[in-house]
Length: 461
Image (cartoon, rainbow, N blue to C red; front, side):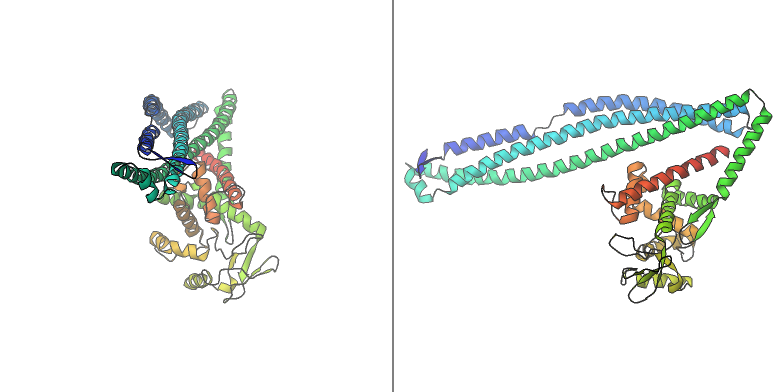
């Protein structure tokens, strides 16, 4: 059926029902999801899991041999065997991680295809929606009297009215379909980003393992050169390594606003905190190292006004009106210091960072703002059985570990630890172009250096 308005031909009845038919056919095409990629992924994963299981069995055997070798008295050949097994174990780990990367590549490929497919579906759906809206506008421009006058009988009239209602329902359904598609696409994009981060983390781990292998091979070459001499010569070498280990343990690990403690003591505290929280010990100490370095550059302040929260730089004499938050942190720091018997006017706090909005007032080696430290007081009190002191190295290190755990560091891997460090610094994950990402990278660099020291001590022990 056809009628005219302002010279434009407008179709109703059978034609609009044709639109409905085309609409549902196109939706059926759009929303059928392919399954072949998932089937291929399952077959690939099954093969990779079998290979992974084989490597893990080899790793268990290597570790068993290593444990036996390490329990024996040190000899040149014995230590060469230990190094050989450590190298082989690291190579197995690289093989294992390459399998994980292969698996992730399959998942990433599938996710990328899914995201692309969903994007295409959404574009097609938008095109259909645009056409239906155009059709609806055409029909809305026609008045009921015109429909009545243009129909030959009552049956045609009701068909046309029903067509208008059907089109409105189609519009509503497609609108919600597009909303669902948009949500599904965002979920897939987030999952894709997660898998890409995992791949990046594993590549970082492989890079670290390759450095370990290079170092172990160099050490093995040195031992092979000693084997041509005598065990007595090697005994002197071992004695020198033990001296180096002792020097590492006794060297002062500097802590901001708290002097320093022997590295061995700091490591003991960090390992205890690691067992409590699951956060890597070297990473915990990396945070403390970074905060101490910042303190050396920016110096510390003293509170000069217990009402406004103004502070004064100890090194430069600068007065900061944003020294410490007057309502959020100032009352809390006074309460914390009161419980510890310390004078708030004589206790060092952080100065505000130059060029960075916000307040200073962070306390102790871990540089917690008072309101954050206050959140962890119940947990720390339960762990230590006393009121926690943010200037006590053991308490500060445990507090750092608890916050890093809550920031996601327990997941492990480069990305998770870097984001946890960025959150520690600014409260948000790492973001390119922001200062927090430089903080995160610096912490991980410190952690890598500290991990080498820990590994050296483990080898000597």
